[in-house]
Image 1: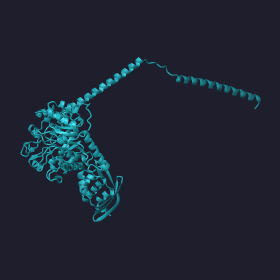
Image 2: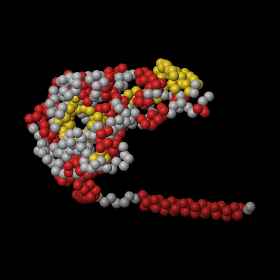
Image 3: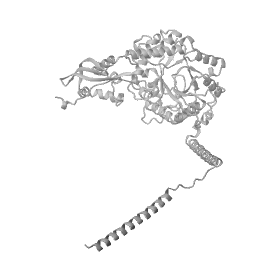
Image 4: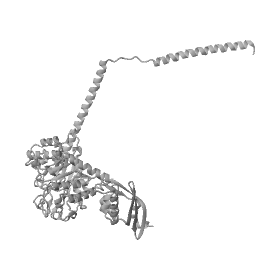
Length: 569
């Protein structure tokens, strides 16, 4: 290439470089200007404090308007619900409770029975309230609908008025009474006598148990009983319970939730309209379920009084409609009437149970505790105890402060620290009861003693419980086995008995080894169809449930008891 050509090329490159430099500077300036415009903050408009306060006030007003609208919607919804309930319930209608109803925390009730006539006499009522103030007592069970089927105070329920059940009315101002109880922190329990109602059949004879020859059936005292299958009777008593809750009663106690005693005679003479194949204990169970559903909005606990013997006998053996397993899971408190005078000669091995208050109560409540043991959600046991002398019992003893205290202490030894005391005349002996401080100290000491010794409510250690379980299996005592067997509530007593009856194997020998924690090594022999199956050091688990020790045996132990013949080796 010659020199002129190189000069031309050099000049051209220089021009191009200058052009590139120019373009770079131009573009850079444009980009910077563009980004400068994007990043430039908008002008800030200053808001005065006065304007801010106006905005806040507007927000408050909006929130208040929304709150008022929400309350109006709530009131309208409640009004509509009340109208629906009036239509549905008719003469049994009772208003819903206020939405701001106070909390109703559970109380360990230690109470006395008080009639409406006692409440209606200020001198006697005040004396009993003073007794509660000065002792461990904290509760009163007060008649609302009594044994005569009439009200203790004026009811506003239409059906009660139509049936003229507002007669006598010993309690003139129930609201003042409830205020007194609240001020003294006394837990009020409303006693409602349900199916033994001599007043109702006289006004609604079609609601009564009927004679086979026609008309209401009557017991030996010439009292007619209402029919536990009759839903109108259910609604009548539940309406009274709702109104009692509105008055301030914190617990509804249904008494006489049963059919008449002397069932053989009753069933021979009477019909039960509406029974339609439903067993008596099923009718009582269904009433309690229905009552619980109907009272759900009223923030009250529910308890049921039952015969004491149903804790010991199995099934509805007296045919009065009370089976422990069909009452306890439904109510909050089950109240067995375990008055020693109510057990016949020889019961629990005592010639005269009335003369053995401590032993009778201990045996009765041990049975009650065992009946609760296999239930998934059993009621709290709160027994009725005796504070009267049963002069009609042959071999009776006078009941004073000592005899009442023996019953209370027998219950406490089983971990039952609630009780109700019955005296029909409401005459109680103050020396029967400790001060609150002393009673609480004894309860705490009893609890600590059980825990330190590893004992359950029945006074058994884990070793004792395992031995009782294995012995019950060996003897095929299904009742005791069911109490002690940890089945995760998979079988009720009917299914458990059928399971035991199905065993093909028999436990013939066992030996309990040293435990490791909650696991026990067990050697045992099960015999089936003449063959012996010996097992060594199988693990059985011990744990507490419903206050007592339970046993969960090894899988193979259960399989050997129930092994099919064709699977034997």
